[in-house]
Amino acid sequence: MNDYHKSYPIRLGIPREELKSKLKLETRTFNAIIKKLVSSSEFKVINERIAIQEHEIQFDQDQQEKIKELIGRFSQNPYTPPSVKESVAAVGVT
Image (cartoon, rainbow, N blue to C red):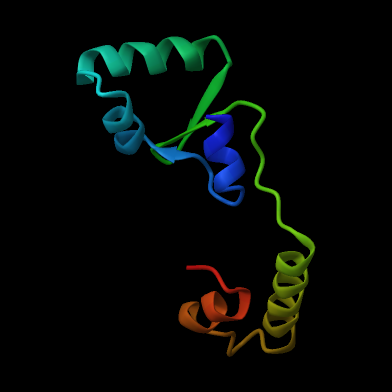
């Protein structure tokens, strides 16, 4: 999981089904393992994504600057904010 978080630092975690597929486990076994890991506070589940409990999204300096600029656009035009498409383009997220 640490490698996944290093590869995708701005994702909440790995999608549940992707992890199950990578581990090649039966659904029942996979669910039991995840339940145990979550109850032991080693992992957390957020919106069907699994992450190490300590994982937090970290933006680099460039990403932070783009987000700050986008927030400024929202503040300047509260009644006509940028669309989702424009917002995604502004921060460069795919």
